[in-house]
Length: 81
Image (cartoon, rainbow, N blue to C red; front, side):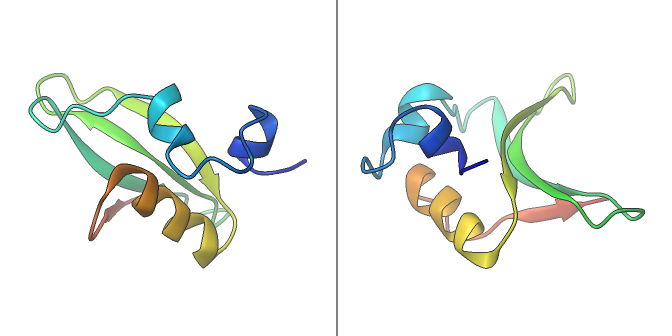
């Protein structure tokens, strides 16, 4: 199985991810959810008011994290367990 961009058929578009899953910095903040049991890491956005997490992509490597940051023009991400 490929990355989320490959699964969506958008392999060569750098901004494709942000086209598919929009991000509103007024109502959401970017976060990585990490499992303490399995070590799985998922990048997404958490709603500031409700706490609802919208999963965007599975992070299997540092490169995946870099792609997520580039797609949404982010400098840093919080990690929560």
